[in-house]
Length: 275
Image 1 (tube, rainbow, N blue to C red):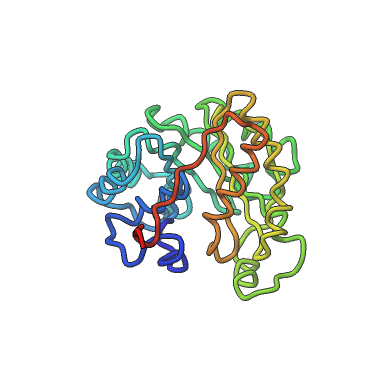
Image 2 (image 1 turned 90 degrees about the horizontal axis):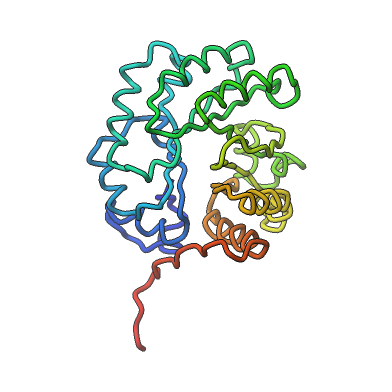
């Protein structure tokens, strides 16, 4: 996601040709969620353009197509998976992790299906799984088999922390829309690998968003001290200021871990002039 209309002319220059939009986003953040790949597999040429606009250390966390995860539920997916993996090949090391987001109807009874699916995946990629069924967050008999299945292929478990968002009723159109669409997810802050991934949803009110992420500032700083390399995605209901808030979060973590590299400097929205 790097073409949000509310960013244009404010956070990134406008207008921009399609082959420059990601480059400008990458001036704000060094990672991106590839949510559009859930709806359609891009062409190799499109993905090659993404690679050309980003440095080798830029991180794409790309969601597997819904045909694989939601419609066929990880079964009989060899062909769509092959097409997807071929399409993203131009990213090379930028493909930080392939994101297997499973529906809320995927229950602990389905973990053996996931385990078989994971074992068949090529070892050339890292994988991260997001589950949404409540049992995975409160039942040790459900958590343990899932963690074991992930561990066999060194896959990560992606938490989607919506606790701050659902603390009180919505107060704007954007929050009301998100209220009906986003899952009520308990907070989980256990890293299974050296590359944990966190998704966090705040509120329209920046102060409440920042208050809600203090837990993650401490957790992420701790992971960094342990030698892990986490990736954190900051969301708010309309995402209008998400890049600004992501940089604020990074600054707060960096205050705890001074050796953390700074984020890149954004490309100026207006050309620099002497007068």
